[in-house]
Length: 427
Ligand code: LRH
Ligand code: MN
Image (tube, rainbow, N blue to C red; front, top):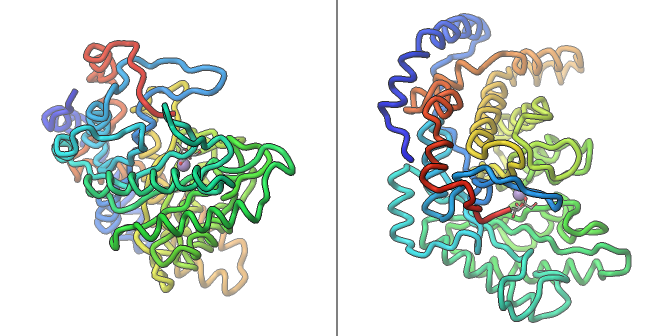
């Protein structure tokens, strides 16, 4: 299933006049605020977010999984689905693979297919939270933190293998997320588990190619429900600093206890020059992996406001960030859900670019608390959708990706090609 440029041109033809009318109104409004629309469009046009290879099929929970039909049955199919999303949005120019769920059988062919879709390979993800068939040592009681040297070494070797797959594909980052932890008090020696993890990560880091980054992802709980070795940003930062300059923290928005101030964590990590990237999603309770901006859009905006400020004041030399989605689709069409997330992320970024940072700093200096909020919310309450749509069209995408996706009945065509019962690898 391919979306042709002709499909998109015809669609944009239909929607152009309407979007330009909105754009002209916004341009008049924003230029009064000293905002140059063309600059904003350029920044948005170049903004790319990686799609998780494990979220192109229907997700599920321990209570059940409901097929969507037409799911990708191979890595080739997954690249084609990311190709559909990228053709429609021009914002999904990368895929993040999870090993062993997505081991490329023919690397050259996979690279060729990705190239045809204009997709590159973002961070690689290792998996030491599941035992593979015939695995000599189990990860049941941990991987990099396990008290058993054999399990630790197996997990280290797996991560080194993942780096090799990534090198062949042109990736330049490894994301390590550990399920390691305990479900009951007394089950683990916290200090030994942390020490083992530091030593294991250091061993992996010593095998990292010079142009690569190591991204250490933290999470407070699940699948362990009493303690997790890498439970929060502080532990991740400490472990990253314990590895070296090219080790950074990865912030998965769903990996925070309720009411955590994530935008402050982002500001802190950027101030330390150790923010490596994101797994964007949204949640109401736990690691719900819901559509970005579907539950807490204002939080997403506040996070991007800290990112924009951090990138404009990057005295700590924070590296370019890895922008990735990490979601799971229990009730929505995965492609539609991912396009909604891309829209929400682009909207939050565009609104954050509208924040008058100079005026905000002045209001902060003057302790004018009311004005601080006014400055933020003026940007947040600006309907930037016509700008996000125009940036997409400028890059060759559709003004209304979801509308065109449905008009072309892409899911119907995928079901026709792949059948109703294919189950994609992943969560
Ligand atoms: C853990 C996580 C991690 C992935 C997995 C699929 O919750 O966020 O990033 O490895 O989901
Ligand atoms: Mn994640």
